[in-house]
Length: 411
Ligand code: RNT
Ligand code: ZN
Image (tube, rainbow, N blue to C red; front, side, top):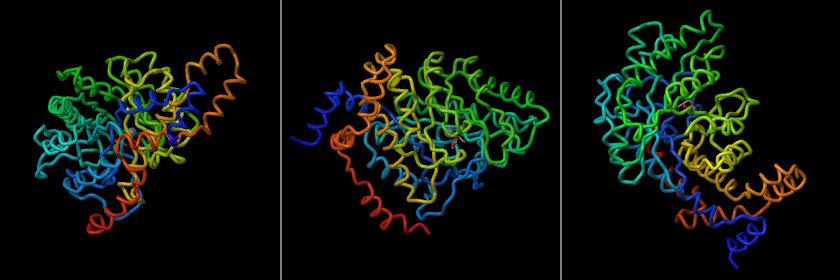
């Protein structure tokens, strides 16, 4: 008997169909963030990363050009099983260097569309409100300087049009996520004004005609960033309320809350009041550090919520982390595979039975089953998923080879 067949029997005894789990996992799309490959630099401004986020480390092989980044993404994609999407930021526009972010248009992303089509994947998009000279005093859409605010509104509008173009060209809906770094290092005198301006700016961006079947706009909140420790304009309450007010989709990044808050716990509440929700899956180590996603308790708890709320098709799942201290391609593959593992782990849980136990207040059996599942032969089912996707378990060897042949030459 193969290890998978044995595992299948063991799970059956626990009331779980491994076949159902494998087929459900096969259909889950993870939007893979392009910015792991070049430490969130992009190609359009030549500016250092700003906005209170930081990639630390100087491992060899950072992608310096669109061609290099595309090559690296293809390498990573070849080692990641399951359905993927490409998640781009506006700063990855391919221009001659003279185009402002307020003037971006589809032609600056044609090569990305070619790449997506080659791999049969969709594209998600993000306006880039950071790492740019028009970010003044750390502010964009909430700036009191009308010229600055207008510039960024126009950037948002340009991105919305590009998002629709992505959807039309690839045939997959495009999720356009808005996140702004705006905030204050120290206690602000006015918390209302910046939020009022942010609201007005979003209203102006959303006044653009767009096809709601093709583009889903999400809004990402944040509690603090480096240099904006005391106040962020786009707080959780602002973003949730705004999403509700305009019927757009809230996005939670699990690095964007106080350390004892659990994003997993928030998912059910948001699902009760939103058709769709979006997630940035990351790993915060003591702060919003954007470490590589692990197969850890937090990731498993998030995946468990999505699965037991029967919400797989209501959650836009994206990764968001940037580690420059290890091989960047390995970072990509490790993080995305871990999210998929967490989803499989959740899919291999008999939630209907567990819910019944909870409702009958049989917390004893609930604990017994939950703990037994932790030592069930999960690895054999994961291996079966890799086999069926024709992807090797060992992704390190091909990555080491690529490092020796390609990455070392990027000096
Ligand atoms: C920043 C947000 C945001 C960015 C990306 C690059 O704290 O998480 O999502 O990481 O847009
Ligand atoms: Zn994020």
